Amino acid sequence: MKKDLGYFKISVIEFIIAAVILLLSILLFSIIADEIVIENESSFDTHVFTYISSFTTPFITRAAMIVTNFGSGFFLIPAYLCIIFYHIKNKKNQVAILVAIVATVSLLSGWLLKDLFHRPRPQLPLISGAGGYSFPSGHSLGGFTFSGVLIYLIWRTSLSPFLKWLFSILLVIFSLLIGLSRIYLRVHFASDVLGSLLVTVVWLSLTFIIMETIEKKTHANEKLSN
Figure (tube, rainbow, N blue to C red):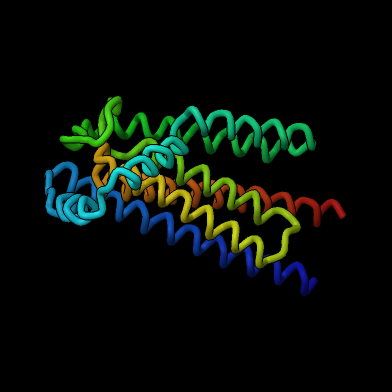
C-alpha cells in the first residue's frame, strides 16, 4: 500500500510539473508570436544575427550545412520508421503508435503554424533552396521533437542513470545545434527556432500528461481487478 501511495505521489508531482511547463510554454509562444512575428519587432532577431555573423567562416558554414540536414525529412522519416519497426518487432505496439503520433503531429503542427503566420524568411541566406514560410522553423521543430522522443525512450530502458543523463544531455545539444545551424545559415530567425522549441515542449508535455493519465487509469484498473 505504501508503495502504491509513493507511486501516486510521484505521478501527481510529475503531472503538475508537466502541466506548469505546458502552460508556460503556451504563454511564451503567444508572446513571441504576438510581439515579434505579428508586430514585426525585429530587434531581438537582428541582435542574434549580428552576433552569430561574427563567427562566420567557411569551415563553420560547411559544418552547419551538415548539421542542419539532421532536421530534415530525409533523415527524420527513415529514423522514425526504424524506431517504429523496432518496437513493433519487439511487440511494443503502444510505444510504436505513440512515436508515430508524436512525429506526425509535430510535422503537421509545423505546416499549420507556418501557414497561419505567413512570416517571410530572412534575407541573404547562406544557402539556397529553403522555401516556404519562416515561423516556426520546421527543421528545428523536427530536431527538437526527435531528440525529445529519443530521451523519452532512453529513460524507459534499463541503462544506468549516468548513461541516461549523458545521452539526454548529448541529445539536447544535438537538437540545439540543429536550431543554431538554421540561424547561422540565415534561413530562419532566432525567434523561429525559439518558437519551434516552445511548440515542441507544448506537444511533448501534453503527450506526457495524456500518457500519465492513461497509465494511472490502467494502474487503478489493475488494482481493482486484483
